[in-house]
Image 1 (cartoon, rainbow, N blue to C red):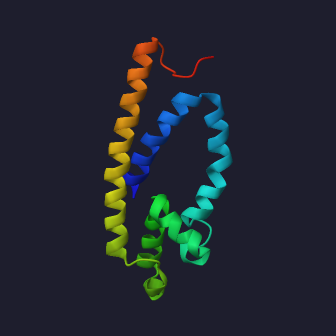
Image 2: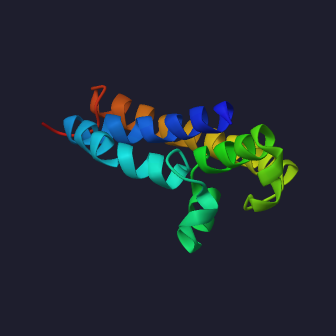
Image 3: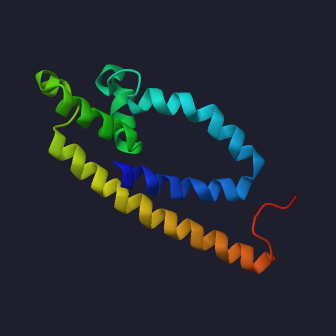
Length: 123
């Protein structure tokens, strides 16, 4: 879970470098919805179809769903996916977001070197 979230953070860091201060405001704005759709406030299965989308995009959703199933075994059948499937999904997310983050940061580095500045956005 941590590796997948860290890899997603690497992807999002390139957005912060591109957009500057606006990304900080966007990050603050998206904090609560990410926690809601990630399953922090309520189980992801209660979100219906949105929960299925969240579990495929946000690493927090399958991680918390698996933790709920392991911490409360009597609710294990109520998870969206079985725990081994969620662990496999987190492993795939870690690899996907890690590779994507590496490519995005390499792009930012190329643009920064060509322009002679760290941030790619013109001020």
